[in-house]
Image (cartoon, rainbow over all chains, first blue to last red):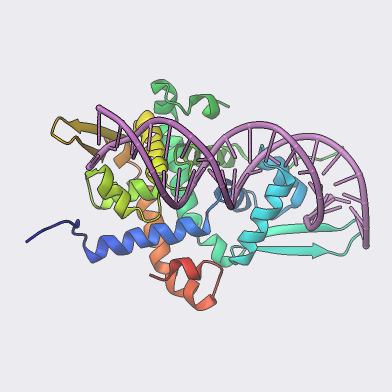
Length: 128
Length: 128
DNA sequence: CGGGATCCAACTTGATACTG
DNA sequence: CAGTATCAAGTTGGATCCCG
């Protein structure tokens, strides 16, 4: 009897599928960071968000926001002022991602010192 | 007094920086999934990993594994057999990411049904 | 101000073929 | 088996201009 496939329990398969689905929603270089800012800071306007998320181009921010909105993670509100102002905020569904955001934030804070000491590839970008 | 900057508490800044650092380590479309497989399934060979992580190309897998190794998240072991076989497994540091992987897996499992019902953009890719 | 349209450069990814 | 080389295709970023 040939055994050419790795056996995986149903439980593991479900977990992995969960990770895959989550990653799909958060796909793109910036989505997680955008959500983090909306979560930790709260409702923000387009230009504020652009300033907060360092390095992102307007075009890219616009695209990522649209995708997040399509997936119902954020809500876009346009105010009929002059000139127009637009707010972005998390939906309840988006808020539910806080478990992931918090975990990532805590992991990053916990290992920041280690990363810096180890001189891993990340250092140049991690130093503030 | 003009207030043109959003005020952010130090605590939030640290959290956001944590998220950013973490994202930097997990940058790339596949790293989180690769780590998930190594975490839930355990040590694996190159080709097994390629089969598990559906859709990834050899070249990309190779590249991502190298980056993960550089950041000390995984360990590469080459066995001097014929033909050569190579194992990949998480380091202790890599294992510490389990908090994030678990959280993402649980979030994904919890909202999978909602996603499917809502018919969000993700559906086509999420259905198994 | 909040974008969208366009063009261009740079980087990433994927498919296929190939090697020790 | 574990990659590498090559080329094609897609994605991203920047700059600029435009509109309401």
